[in-house]
Length: 247
Ligand code: NAD
Image (cartoon, rainbow, N blue to C red; front, top):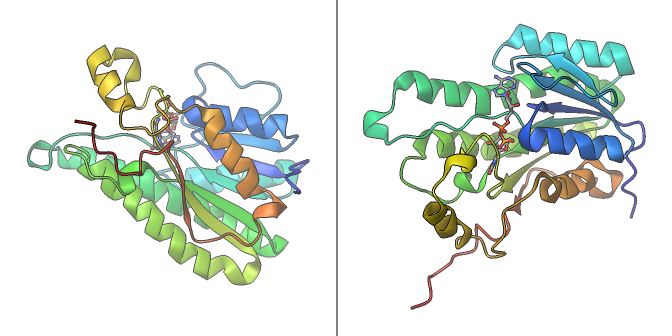
């Protein structure tokens, strides 16, 4: 199977920390040219990748970042729309500004970054757009309305964009991670009992790592995945399998 990403230009949004940093690490290990976009880089940018300050909610910022990546490497082969925020709260109490922020980053960011790479990929006659959804796009839980709605929107956006870009040989897919301990979910401060309850909702009974996701993304970015498009791939360790607690 041909998974070689040598010299492929891979842009990862939200790549300064968390899952995005893990994805960028793996792309570098696969000999791709990794370009990470993020609001800022508090820990610096490793020498093996390019870091560009970018707010995915700002069209000019995104256009500028993609133009800089193209200036630098000539093209963008793969866009991984990883940047995302978690907004939680029951609908009755949720600040409308927080709901909007969630949509702006999680859906608007995917739209703006996709829009910026489309002409580049169309010119090349190939490309991969890969979007971070979540198990939350499928499984409802109290307090997740904003986040869940944003991720469900990413899934349908993915399907539509796949149809629009298919004629250029560009594939568009989404993936649904389960639970990766990161800053996003405040895992570090979660009480042990809550952690135990959550772990029991994963078929594999272990927390997900960025590498679990990167394994899938290397495949999706590669030539081997050329006939896969418009789909949501579950990489949640069984979070989407129905689990009925034992009596
Ligand atoms: P994280 O908070 O650790 O990292 C997110 C990164 O996105 C940060 O570096 C942040 O600065 C960046 N970002 C946020 N807003 C941005 C903006 N406007 N412009 C540019 N960059 C911005 O989160 P994570 O856990 O690594 O999550 C990454 C993606 O995976 C998100 O889309 C998230 O919804 C999704 N996801 C995460 C989990 C999980 O368990 N952690 C589960 C399912 C899906």
